[in-house]
Image (cartoon, rainbow, N blue to C red):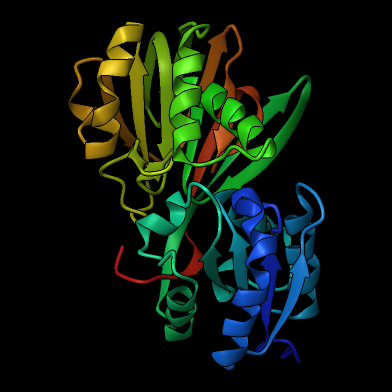
Length: 314
């Protein structure tokens, strides 16, 4: 069944993204969209998780083309909306991005330009790429929840860092430097956790500092937590950092930027389709920069499930 909205872009704008650049720059962005000749409907988010609701309701009306004006967190919410709607198979929905966020790690993976005009030109090129997605079941208290993601999930130390970084963003103090500051302050109180990890048929038990699980390479504003990730191979990449001395973390931050984190002797890497993680005490989770709940966790890959408009081959 066709819809009158199939050729109209739904533009979901997060006005608070990038230290409120979504709001400040919307006049310029909308003017460029007009100049590019795009037919669109713009909707602003009003609160956390609102982008999920906007995506679901509008896709159910018949919208099949979406532009996210925001950061990785807004993209994550829209992806969750795509999976929650019932009208279309998820790969039939085209997803573009005009990045105004502070991290922009998903966009970095696919060559999405930071310049607004170039980003809109990229969207008009309609260079579609079908990437994998992940879904994680997690807990908050005794309640189980589900979240979809298209970049990276961080467990343990990274989840604490993201939580601190998000609080800095809320105070208008975002940017890559905020992530680095949060790393240093989090080191003061973080403890290793006895963790059981089951990756397909492989089981690992160890004292864990951090686990990264994902589809793409980058997080934390350009750090390569998963330097060998391939976004359409039907597998999660997993980086496990075992118990490590705190000064060793600081000395090896550069490895996260140059892609050599997997060369460190306390780091192990894996690939798999399904992952189960439990720990004592509980450890926390973030996906695509959004702080969520705690262990136990169950991850599953969803191959070839999200169509994204990219600037170059992944």
